[in-house]
Image 1 (cartoon, rainbow, N blue to C red):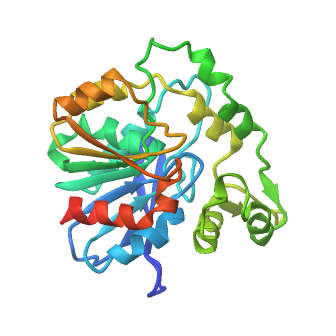
Image 2 (image 1 turned 45 degrees about the vertical axis):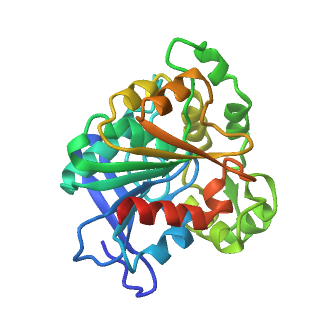
Length: 292
């Protein structure tokens, strides 16, 4: 399924039968070129949120920006019952790499999307050239923290209280502009987020594509082993970490990985967890360097 608008990335749905549905993606750049980068978004967001960051790279690279399960236009089922980890997101990404037979690609992602990339590269080093992460979610290893701490966290409770339905997308933009997580976003980026972050209901109103219950489940489910995936890495991993409120945990484990040369970590001054929105120039530069 390709977009017919020349100034838009191509829109596609890739069927992943073994995963129960289709993964939506935006396809930037020359369609005749092998894929250079697969980019994965943060919890609650979608591929189109990052369009204004990725589109300027399309003249040089081919980039696939995906909608993860439960987000954007993807049709993969988002079932929260019994869910404890992001391993399902990892497996979705692995299925996409296999279905499209992608090789020698850069995996890149923001927040939860970055973590999914780390988990995936550990199981598919033959398909991945390197990994670039923008303030990924790197939590204590499984067993170090009581899962109830995540289940009852302010992030989970905030997601469950999130307003899901608005009269129209214009109303969403008006409600979000300059507020909360969107304070540092450009108008263009906010409009892109809303475009695929909300879907039209039968009654004409719009509702979140990422249901509050699914967003909350992502915040609560941390039994995956990110540290083990770092240890298993056979490709270079670069992390650009937020200066304030980072979700990339500092400490002896991270320091040991850096000292061993398994990962490189840079803290970007003046940035928050929304680093890509605040410093799109650094994201573009990092992707150019990785894919070049």
